[in-house]
Image 1 (cartoon, rainbow, N blue to C red):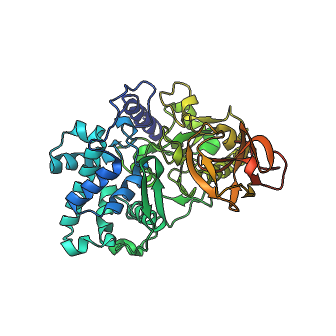
Image 2 (spheres, rainbow, N blue to C red):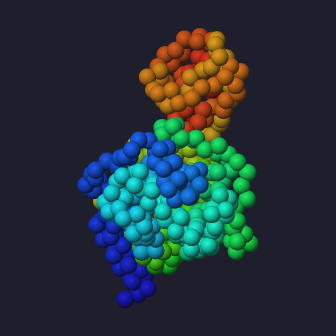
Length: 456
């Protein structure tokens, strides 16, 4: 058998695991598990109880969960790497935090997978066990920066650069602060100086991609893709859009695990649009579940979960679209929805990504060069203007803006007709992820749609 044939056989073996639901993205054929739930009250109550019991700083515990899942248990379904619950307790060939949590807390695996309070308590117990193994005293445990090695170990990455990337993500959240309004959770930013130890001498991922300049390079295991020369052997005709069903650092680490049998060429981070390349474009990544499409496509993973729209930020859309625009130019791929497709659209696909919350209209506008950002000034009688989760007065209020506030307008949509300071209009301005305000209260300098700003 040729090397290519061996690699193809290994790929097919990987697709059998995918089909069995052991690896990969959410399956349309998967059974629906029991909904995750939180006993004893809110997530805040669960975090406070777990922190008090374990001695893990509460905000550190919340930051780990937010970095992993945005605190969403996803109905008890596993991530692509076998992680469960808001804390992503994992069971896979290299990370066994779920098993460790069961051993430390005495809770059954089934409870740890589906009960958010138990999941949080289990993660806290695991982190505390790592701190104890590191010899952290009671006094040292009060310093949030001393927990860095425990966070590194929790992430489970074997590559030191990826391990630092994971832990730095948690500490960046602590430094900047963040909120999860749906859970009434707010973590206020503070100065941090994580004790990185030997990892302090490393860049997170310091090597740049030779295929795409803005991307970092963190190679996947050679067990997870097929070495090829597609310039001579295949035509690249498609870009396939995926969602990781997990975190950015976790997905990079998973592609480096020889047991994964999956990979993608690129991964895009939610928070800032950072990109890492894991497979060279000339080689065949195992991402589509269809060998023909794998040979003819570039796979782009996007950090997040298909059921949670909060991961799909403007930074992610714009960075990914710039990458896709580069690929379509390089390989003469048509910039249309017949050639830029979701994983769900691959023939024979059993997966749903990128899912219902992926904004194809906006993404394709960006790919095709409609990249303008508008701006405006809020003018409202009274003290504040409501910010809503969608383009209409029927959507939930998710914040407010003071009179005179300046906003960036990423795209515009039609919705509920509103009469305000600047007349009557059905135009709504998206000013952030799932954050909309009526154009009737925003002075953009234009009557109607802003020229050059894409429609949402």
